[in-house]
Length: 313
Image 1 (cartoon, rainbow, N blue to C red):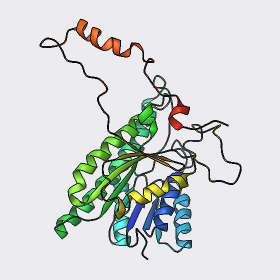
Image 2 (cartoon, rainbow, N blue to C red):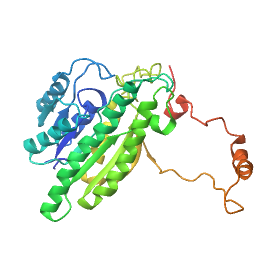
Image 3 (cartoon, rainbow, N blue to C red):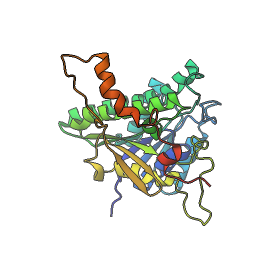
Image 4 (tube, rainbow, N blue to C red):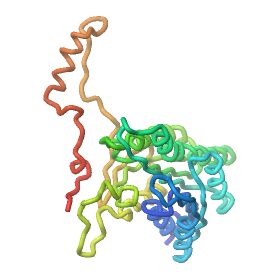
């Protein structure tokens, strides 16, 4: 019996460690040939010398298991390096079928303390990085579709975060980038559907070097069971979204972690007020809207434990 992704090729960015590594291994296990991209900097803030070692190690792990993989040392936030990444996949495997955008960095700071560079660097790697690879992959699929005169196979899986959904006080840059990725995903899904391409985004909960502070103190199993926050709980969903089985899943946002997948609805109107005259006055707005918020907590944010659905140890 053939594997779900047999004969397909995939790019996974930020695949040298953590979530990206688990996703690259899963796509290879399902039969895909993989380009393992990672810039290889040791610091989760994007600091340190770039190194091919993390990407090479994962590519070798795939090859040792009988799969096909090549490594790519490149910064996806650089437009031309993103172009080279997509070209590598096409030159090596003949075409590109799957793009998984995962690369990112953290530079956490409260909004009143954050520097311009801390803002720009996170937006650049996460949001611009997602755009860069998506742009070149989309151009590849559009050209193939025009050449063939019909739809082609294409899958994009982007990485957002619940920091965008529930807020994250010390991560205004990260939360904004992750929200932007959802907007990019839904726009891309609409633009590329006619060519046979789908685009979806996930909000993963996983224990990696990027989230070691967030999940510090949360229980880890001591009886040999797989950690609920292990990246291996996230990668099967990525494999599914990359497969033909998910052909009708497009423009969606899904939260995923240990044994749970939640499909997030698009925002809905919570309340609606109509002016009694041609336009609102200040007093009328005060009379209508202020009572609506009287019994609600200021800002109405979610506590971290409530959002994560986890217990601390």
